[in-house]
Image (cartoon, rainbow, N blue to C red; front, side, top):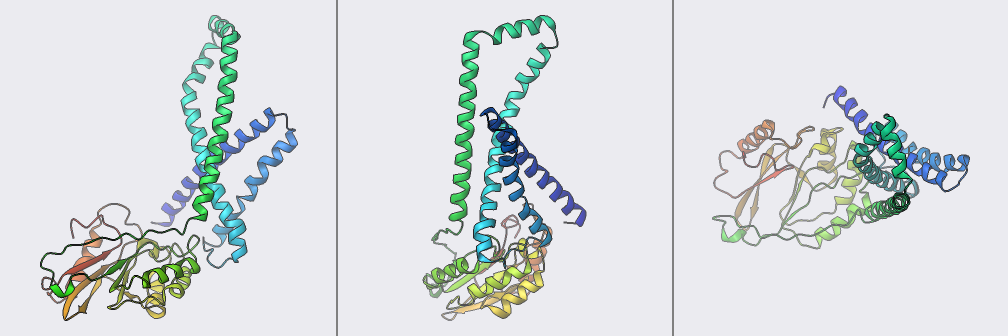
Length: 346
C-alpha cells in the first residue's frame, strides 16, 4: 500500500467513524433537550465523552499505534474503555443511520406535500386527527425505547468483548494423509495463528497460551503468521511470552501480512534469536520423527495480499519447494501459509 493509498484509507475510515459518532451525539443531545435539560448541561454531557474518547486517536497517530508499552493502569482504565466506547457508538450509529435511511422516503413525501397548498392543508388535517396523534406518540415512545435498548446492548456487548478478548478454543482435528508411514501416525501437531501481540494481546495473555500448549505435549508446533499487530516492538512481549514453548521435534513459524506492517526482518530476527521458533522464510525444513521424515514448507504473506489470489505467494512456494532438493515426493509435506486463498494453486 503506497503512502497516498494509506492516507486515503485513513481519511475514509475516520470519516465514517466520526460521521457515525456525530450522528449518535446529535441524537443524544436532542434527547436530552426533549427531556427538559438545559442547553448548557446538554452540550456538556454530549461534548465531554466526545472529546474524552477522541484524544486516544491523537495519541495513536503520534505514537504510530504502538501502545504495547503504555502503563498497565493507563491501558485498563482508559484504552479499554476507549475501545468499548468506539465499538458501541459505531454500532449505535449504524442503527440510527438505518432508521434515517428507512425514514427518508417519507420525509421526502412530506416535504413535497408541504410545497403544494392543497396537499399541505390535507396533511395538516390528517396529522391533527386524534388517532394519528396517538399513533405518533406511541411511535416516538417505541423509537426512544428501542434506541435505549440498542444502546444498552451495544455498550454491554462491547464491554463483554473487551473483558473476554483473550478467550480461546482448542479444536482437535484428525488429519488423514495418504501413504503416511506407520511411525508418523498419531503425531500431535499444535497449530496456532494470529496472536497479534499488541493492544489486545499482552505478555501475560500470551504466556497463558504457552502454558496451555505445553500441557498438550506437542510433537510439533506450527505458527503461520501475524505474530505482531502493527509495530515491530510488539515482537518483544511475544518472544518473552513464548520463549518457554516446548515441542519434541521443533517449533516452526512464518510471517503474516501484519508482520510486514512495520519491519518484517526485525520481527523475524527477534523471534529467531529470542525464542525457540524457527522461522521459515520461503524455504523449508525436514523433520525426523522415529526414523521417518516430514517436510515443512514455510511461505510468507505480503503486506497487501488481501483476499485475492497472489502470484507472488505461488513464487514463494516454488522457492520453498526448491530447497527440498527434489525430495518433496518422498515425504509427507506440510505447508505453512498465512492465508488460504492460494491453496488450490499450490
